[in-house]
Amino acid sequence: MKIAMIGTGYVGLVSGVCFSDFGHEVVCVDKNPAKIEMLERGEVPIFEPGLDRLMERNVAAGRLSFTVNLAEAVKGAEAVFIAVGTPTRRGDGHADLSYVFAAAEEIAGCVGDGTVIVTKSTVPVGTNRKVAEVVAKANPSLKFDVASNPEFLREGAAIDDFMRPDRVVVGVSSDRAQELMGEIYRPLFLRDFPIVYTDLESAEMIKYAANAFLATKITFINEIAALCERVGADVKSVSKGMGLDGRIGNKFLHAGPGYGGSCFPKDTSALARIGQEHAVPQQIVETVIKVNEEVKRRMLEKLRDLCGGSFNGKKITVLGVTFKPNTDDMRDAPSLTIVPALIGGGAKVAVVDPQGRREGEGMLPGVEWVEDPYEAASGADALVILTEWNEFRALDLQRIAGAMASAKMADLRNVYAAEDARAAGFEEYVAVGR
Image 1 (cartoon, rainbow, N blue to C red):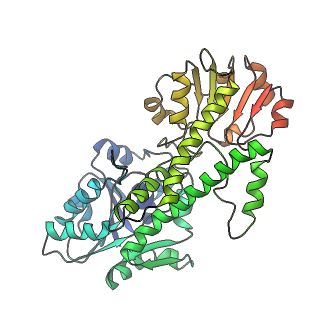
Image 2: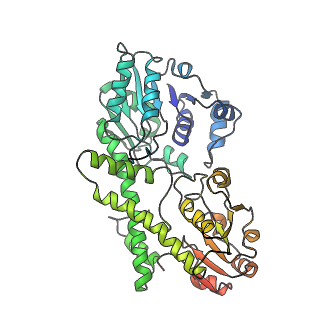
Image 3: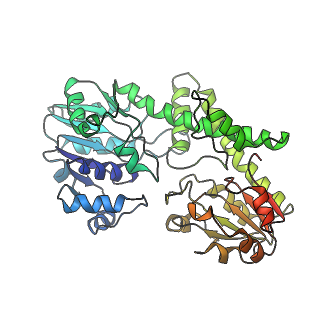
C-alpha cells in the first residue's frame, strides 16, 4: 500500500518510518527543504532511540523516501496522513489548526478518488469533519473518506509503542475507511494487538481524555508529595502502595518537578478550552493545569531554601534539562521555568544534558553547557537533578561532593537515597515528597 505522510515532526517521522517497516511504501513530506535534505542524507532531526537505524533500513529497501513536493508524494497514495503541528494558540489556549486545514486544502487538489485522508495530529473534537468540509470545498468532485488515527507514542520509547501498542484507535465514518485502515494496521492485527474502531468524535476525544488522565495522575502524586513532606511520609512508598492496586496502576505516579513535553501541557489546555466552548467546564483538568504550574514554583522555593534564601552569586549545577530522559525535546520542560529563575536571581548555572543542548542553547540563554557532570559540579554551591537520565543514576557522589564549594543536592527526581547522599559527604540533601 502507498502512504503519504504530511509532516516530518516527531509523530509524522516516527509513524512514517514504522509504516514503511510494516512493508508499506511511504513518502514523507515536509515544506522545510533543509529538513528533507537532512533526512535524505540519513540524518534524523530528532533524538529517538533506534529511529536512525530503522530509517536507514527502510530507505535501503526502497520503501521509504522524503520530498518537499506534496503533489508528487500523494500521487497514487491510498491513504494520506496529516501529521502537522497543532501548537497551543496564543491568547486562548486552543489548539492551532491552521496547519491541519492548510494541509487538507493542499491535499484536496492533488489526490485521486478513493483516497482516505487520515488525521494523525492531535486535534479537538469535530476537526475531522471540518477537514472533510475543507477538502470538499477545495475539490467538490473528489470522492474521498476521512479517518481519525490519534497517536499514543511516548518520546524515548516511540518505536516500541508503535510496534507493540496498548491499542490502535481508528475513528471512521464509512466502511471503506475502516477496511483500508484495517489493511494498513494488518501487521498489528495479526499479532493480536487491539484495534479500536469508533466514530470520528470518539477517536478525537480518546486522545485528549487519555493524556489529561495521565497528567492528572502526575499532578495528583505531586500534591501528595507536598503533603508527605509536611507529615513525614515517603512519597516513593506511598506511590508503590498505591500502584500495586490494579485499579490504579503504578505508571505516572513518580513525584517530581511537574509534567512538560509536547503533549500534556498542550492537550490539557486544549481540553479545558473545548469544555469551556461547549459549556461543560472540565474542572479537574483546569485544576491540574493550575497545580502543575504551582509545583514548578514549589521546586524553586525548595532550591532557594537550599541556597540559604538567595541564588545571588551562587554557582548551581543542573543535571538534565529535557522534559524527560531519552529525548531532546525541551517543550514546556520544567527547566524552562526553573533555570531562568536561577539566572534571574543572580546564579551562575552550569548545565549537563546528553541531548538537550541542540534545542536548549536557544531556550536557555546565559547557561554554561558542560559535557561532564564532575567538571560541571566543580566549585558549585548546589547540585540539582532535574531530569533522570541514566547517566545521572550512578554518579560517584563522593567525588562530586568533594569537588563542590558547598555540597548540597536537590534531587528533584528522587534518584538517590538521603542516607547515601549524606554518607558520600553531602551536607544537605532535599528530594520531593520525602
